[in-house]
Image 1: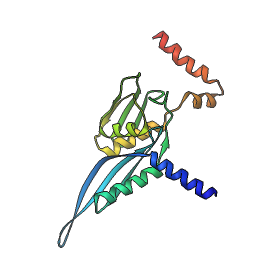
Image 2: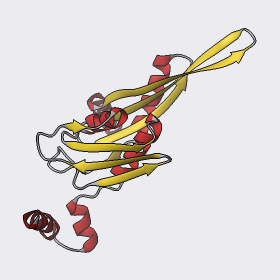
Image 3: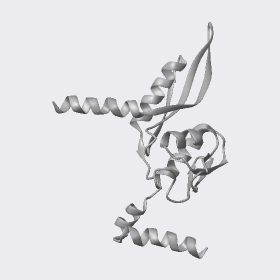
Image 4: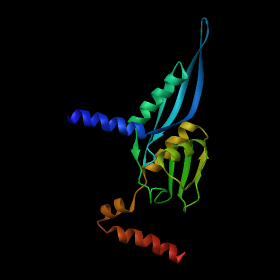
Length: 182
């Protein structure tokens, strides 16, 4: 009985998952009879409620590469704390290789101001207001990995409060106090 309910839950979770194709790369291998083409697909998946993942798949045909990338992305999903379910709790930087990204929380109505691969991450994550800047490389793989490094370092006020042994009101109250001073 428990096994069936778990399977049903997994199917339900998969139906809620949205996937976005970020890039497809065609590579050629020269062989005796000519060229053999292969494809590499970079896919981002998320449930638009705070969970997101990315994956890369390689195959001889595009649909198979996308399927492999989607499966890998579903296995590597992370949970990201969101403020009011629409933006980040605080500004954060991420770095991977030559890629560096800056992610900033934004007021309501701002929208997603981000380039290419980062936009796909935020749309599948469920973020509605964010300002992001990519510095360094424009390689989509490194941009997405840098974005994920930044998202992994995000902490909600509740997480900070439990780590410090304080109340959430103390942490959030300081943020409101700092804005009043500025």
